Image 1: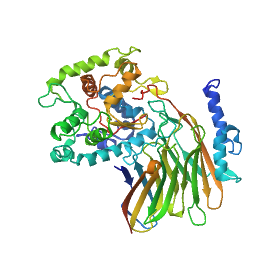
Image 2: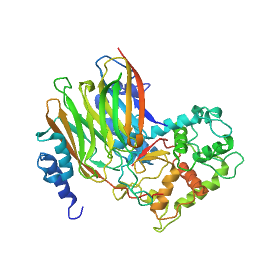
Image 3: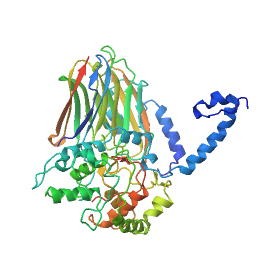
Image 4: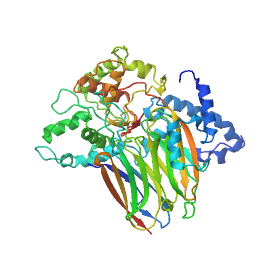
Length: 106
Length: 150
Length: 273
């Protein structure tokens, strides 16, 4: 079950700079830690986070294993037009998650 | 920190943070190499970048970090990328973020892991091909009571 | 005194009535009195929240940054999901809003039971008895998520333990465990968390051990965890053997700790280092 929390305003004035926050449940296993059996737990991280506004990319961030478990990202965007903002996470072991929020721009 | 008193460490850390990045003596090689990969032979200037991270953290598993860059964020002059590096984690890269005028404001916050007390460097790359940086030293305290792995 | 004493003194208009000089002369007296009052009535107990740095306090306070809220959200989904042979969801019997106040009151005696159960035990019991589903494993994500969503309904309330007389012997049992030296380090809970609370152990402030935020997101765990997990950590810390997961000793300690934290503000999901 993908578990994501997005915080974005529901409305904005055209041209306004808004803050977007995204939190996702993910272990972000570094690949450097030994497990209880003494063997290294294989790396399992989110490698990329992107945000798109009506399909056009507005932000991209490549993660390393140094990003904390349950990754949190906050960034800004200029409110351009009404529609939807889509957040996408992809990573090791075929991980892919997506969440969209609607926004009204007046 | 054998052989180093807290006072000399703090004095050293203060000294390191005022030295320009180009003097790679205080910077472990891996981080210097990773930075070189991003900036090439371009000069790195201090300023414009603010790296906000607590100087002392109670646990290195999730250290809040905010990078902000002074920039008009216009087509002609904006921040294209923000890169963050660390010195002592197994790998020097922390994250690379791509920005554009669509962001309006060059500011990113996230949470990172720090395996030990160390220096963090943030580098901003502008649309004009300039590089600006800021660095911070973080002291990570280790938990007194550890849990067994069961 | 420049001004004559007012007939019906009102604190709000005191400066108007008394004149500036008189008020200035009175201020230290007023402050001293109110300070003494505050001291006498002040609750000196500290939640672990108060010992954290500003960055971690902010992480707990901001619902969009608090990783514990991911578990609350998952719990809300699980709450509505029918499971087990009965094919019933939690929501089929309970409105989530009715869970307000439950976490600040537990542990409690189950109907027809002779041993107290904590919130975790209550959820497990519902799951096996009413939903007729497989039991949820201790510290499993689904169990923690259900605990989190129930506990979150009580956030901001004061801890208000049940006054069920049947709990008294268990509270006494918990108090005795709290005072008892255990493990290879031969320490009791009280030695650290009463006698030495507020002092440093390595770089960490020893907390007063009030269960104000459970289940909580501990950075050391990189996950949400229960009070029971925390108690097991402490036992390992003093090199004692952790009690079995189903031991009533944990619940007894929880009853004692909740009683000791009576009246403190409940914060779940807390964030701790």
